[in-house]
Amino acid sequence: MVLGREAAMTYARYGATVILLGRNEEKLRQVASHINEETGRQPQWFILDLLTCTSENCQQLAQRIAVNYPRLDGVLHNAGLLGDVCPMSEQNPQVWQDVMQVNVNATFMLTQALLPLLLKSDAGSLVFTSSSVGRQGRANWGAYAASKFATEGMMQVLADEYQQRCVSTALTQAVRAPQCVPAPSRPKIHRNLKHPLISCRSTSG
Image 1: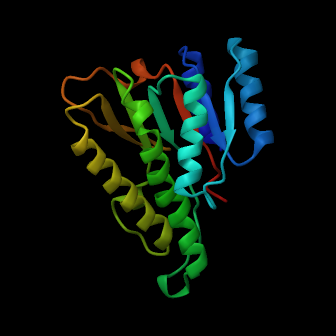
Image 2: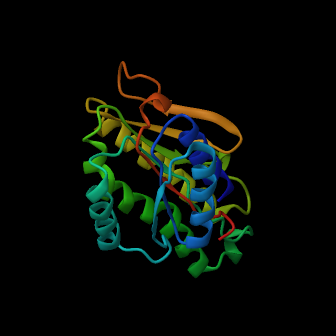
């Protein structure tokens, strides 16, 4: 959750009204408290376990967010599971499924549910978190690498589908600068994030 926490703090420092999402209420409460202490604004948070969530859960979440927020200016998909780091022949099928559920399926379902709120923004942004193994496969990184290839593909599809509308997509990695696929003639992403939702989950599970 470190990356998600730092992103939330940074957005808040730039004046964003931050909405937090995660499975651990105590950790969310701590992040919200830090933001409140530093900025004087109290973020709202929502509980959702991406490992077990369904499309219906995500739609219900979007409805709850819409009660207090007329739009979302950005969504950061930061949640992730690492899974087993071992040869393909030793990958545990259930762990593989769990990694795909959190890193791919839940990301898709959340995006689908939140798109109507993003489309109400003049300049909405979807930010996905990837990895170098999502571009070049590496031995023993089976499930995680496959999930990040899927993440990058999802981002590219969304970028193409919404290039003429008010949503841009971006890709960020923990140790690399953001790589953006923006719609034509769009301002920089960080300037638009007034109401971002941050999805957080430790990559270690």
